[in-house]
Length: 352
Image 1 (cartoon, helix red, strand yellow):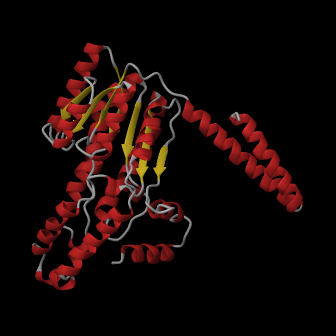
Image 2: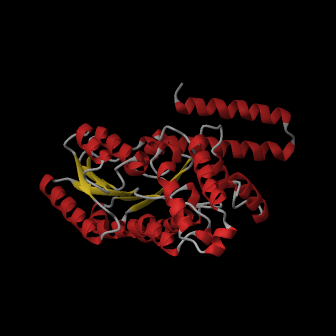
Image 3: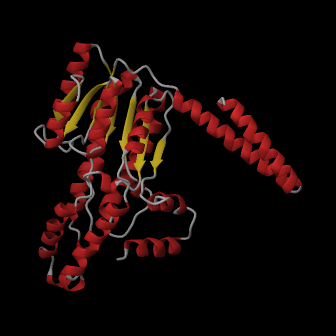
């Protein structure tokens, strides 16, 4: 059945039921809300179906050694785009895998987004390659990120700085470097934040500070770029930590122990070693256990953000082995519930 006919049937049947079972003004209100909802779905279907002509377009993706960036490059390569895959190390296992499985349209770059010289070198290479091949540089996907954990009081200030250098300042550095090319093509900047840039849990102040700030940066940049015809899009993955390399217990365990050993005697007494380390590891373990194992919904959102004629401003994507992504649910409920209720819920969920 065509979409338009299906819409008419749904509205007709629903209107009949509402008229028979709801009195007076409720008929009008419910029918109006139903109509708006169906029309909204219809509009979204049409929006998602319209694609830009991407055959001659080039995209830079950061953080391609593993996880979402790695998978996105492979997806866009199949679509036929020219890709610049920024990796922390050109010789990493992920970088070598991309060179092995992808077409000649994929250029793997050494790109530490905290280093001006590597960002400048990447910009020069991208500009030179696009000029030589006649490709239009279309978009940047700021995907590179880290997810440190720990209580506020025991996390050193340089831990906050190191996270911000990647998750926020790296995003800003890349965006500012490539904006001249993107303004010229009236292209896209796609910034990966997180559901935890909308709601913060105990032990995640470092990560959430960077992601809340990245949300702010992205919203501001989108409003500034409107007059240039540039779209700035936010992708907010939910519970996908176990499907990416951002959650790695074996890497985090020695880091937590080393951090505890460097603490003052007073802090060690307030935060016993076994409990402090196990709190973080249990939180990570719960994250990995309940996480979605398939990142396809996030990659689909990236593709829509990059290739839709009219992308959304933001994509909040739930991901979980449960029926409902608890992180996405809390992000939606957060602005609606009193603070003390959210405090109780999030403290209990984190079990700190």
